[in-house]
Amino acid sequence: MSKLAISEQIRSLRKSKGLSQEALAEIAGINLRTLQRIETGSAIPRGETLRLLARALDVSLQELSVSVDESPVVMDEDPGFLKLMNLSALTMWFVPFGNILVPLAFWILKRNRINGVAELGKRIINTQIIWSVFTYGSAALIIFPLFFDQTFIDPFFMMPVMLLFFVANSIYIIVTTRKIARGERQEFARV
Image (cartoon, rainbow, N blue to C red; front, side, top):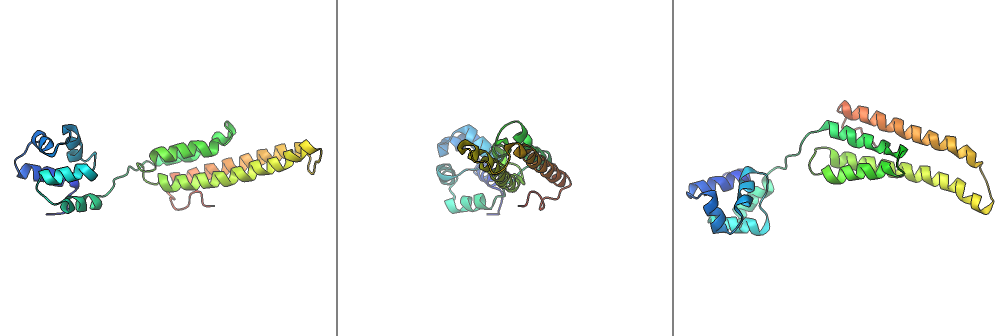
């Protein structure tokens, strides 16, 4: 049997046996809509569904499962989403830790659907975690001693320093977004 995509393989086996989709679904004991999704390529049969289809088509499970393992996963290209995900870290200006939470939400939702999101998302999240620990940690080290009447640094000095940290992170995010727009995929957000 040639190495066709699993959807094409099941469709050609079904047609070679003279079965309609309804008949194959009934013989295999699966839902007709499931079979239609498999044949259009929008679903990949696994586990019990794969076993039932193999038995109904009189082929070995290995013949079908080899083609499942070899079928490539097609991911969309969307540089606009990559830029949006990177710019979403700017929510730090409005929501504390938004620079981590919003890119994390984008990463979780799209990491397996859009090419480049898995890698970029990890880098954004790691960079923003390091930035947040450094920025908020240094602020805590200055503010915490105030509760014990021990000041090492003037707390009002910290406001311009925090502003500088926020501006520096914003510049970093914008520069990284420009690199993504130019297609410099290997260069974004290295820490």
